[in-house]
Image (cartoon, rainbow over all chains, first blue to last red; front, side, top):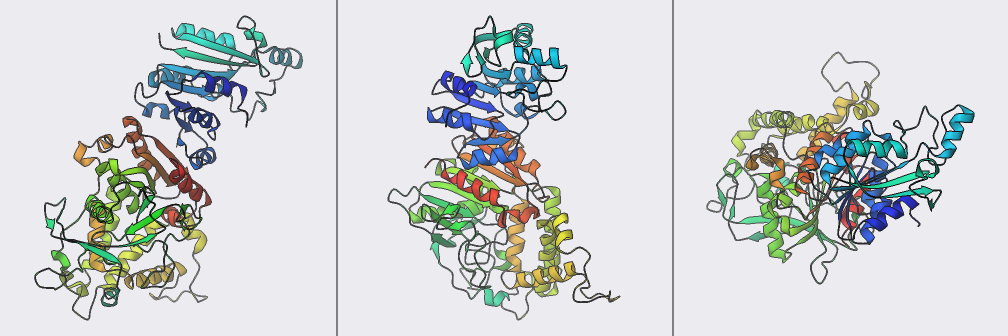
Amino acid sequence: MALRPDLAIIADAVPSSARVLDVGCGDGELMAALRAKGVDARGLEIDPANVTAAIARGQSVVQGDANRDLADYPDDAFDYAILSQTLQTTERPDRVVDELLRIAPRAFVSFPNFAHWRVRLDLLWGGRMPVTRLLPVAWYETPNIHHVTVSDFRDLLRAKEIGVEAAWYLSGDKPTSAAAATWRAEHAIFLVSRT
Amino acid sequence: MASLLHHIQHQGVTIDAPLPLDSGQILPSVTIAYQSYGALNADRSNAVLICHALTGDQYVASDHPATGKPGWWARMVGPGKPIDTDRFHVICANVLGSCMGSSGPASPDAATGAPLGMEFPVITITDMVRAQAMLLDHLGISRLHAVVGGSMGGMQTLAWAATYPERLGAALVIASAARHSAQNIAFHEVGRQAIMADPDWQDGQYYASARAPTKGLAVARMAAHITYLSEAGLTEKFGRRLQARNIKSFGFDADFQIESYLRHQGLAFTDRFDANAYLYITRAMDYFDLAEPHDGRLAGAFARARDVRFTLVSFDTDWLYPTSESRRIVQALQSVGAAASFVELSAPFGHDSFLLDVPALDRLVAGALGSGF
């Protein structure tokens, strides 16, 4: 089964001997790909059905909430922390990023870019909260409580003096340039590190 | 009756080696009754030890010799089942202090041949685990693929990981805790007092007499049984319904179905369990606190268990060993960097959920055992 393109990028970028925590790991799709290449991957996931599915696949996953339970991991417990498509659902994304970079020196953070041109046009012409491929749920029931744009995230990293080691921007399944990312990227993936 | 119970022949082994106990006393030799299922493979790497709960026994997947009922985890253990005896060599031993063939208070004194009764030393969960390790040494099994247990079986599983971390690959702990809480101890004390207040208990030396403390043991079981169920489960199963009558008796018969049910549970229990064994095993559970030898830091107990793969499961309706106790264990495991999995399952049956039909549990058990193969 093909991985979601953002997950494929992360799976490709993690070195094979690394210790990794996948925060919001779902049913363990990315962890399976990571483990196939020898990565020691563990997960944190809030939904018990997903946790059960991942454990049933032989993976190490703890049921928990990224808003609270990252505190249980010691400093530098992992080489990489991964937060894919979850940042915008957390109560305090800034604190979650701090936690990721406490438990690992590097973190992958991916999120849907709320400044993608289609979102902008939707708002501009429709005057309503956009419902898109990556943001498919109506405003009142969406888990995405902190919509974020590529520029917002870059600002946050700058304010926190967090380094960017790499970034990938996807339009559909295709890469797009950093320069145009703020309006062309549907989806952004950052590899950030402590500075 | 206790006297009948002690005439059942169990498969077992007597190991003529001393077992030093946590109390400082020493058992000069140990008898361990056990059952096994499935073949041990050539490199002896497929053994799975199942640890039973307080009133459980080694008959995990075979009919109980006293009651004739199916094994207590027959739904989980067998060919093609989550603990697949086509793949695993499954061992289940009667715990030290119990009454189904292993050394316990009904065992004879070596000098006089009379039952030890309260002369049997007080034992701990870790003592039970040491006895199991002696059995495995005797069987030539140096390393277990996994140790699995629910409730008190989960405590033994945790004690295995803390005591012999190099001897197990995986630990599966279901509906359990790393310590007994004040509430846990309180319920056990009610049960023990019921037994010891029964005049037929006779300071524990009832084996040779015609009387055994079955009334006290039945009351102990009734009180404990309530703690194994959820309030919602009791309400759904019994509510306030009356037992075989339309109106209240204005007396003290078992008017309510729940009363009748508990009386039956208490009475049936005395056919298959020894009152002194109940005292000893509940005591062992009350003394259980894995963090105690590590200045109250539970992580200290798992410092050497980094390479054990842990899976913990709790149930949302279990108020005896609630989810918070499992989370506490997970936090300790994470702080030492051990691979830990944890999930709270939703099931209506309270603490007893681990014995009952919870399909998600089957998948979890299979997954926790399948990894590494």
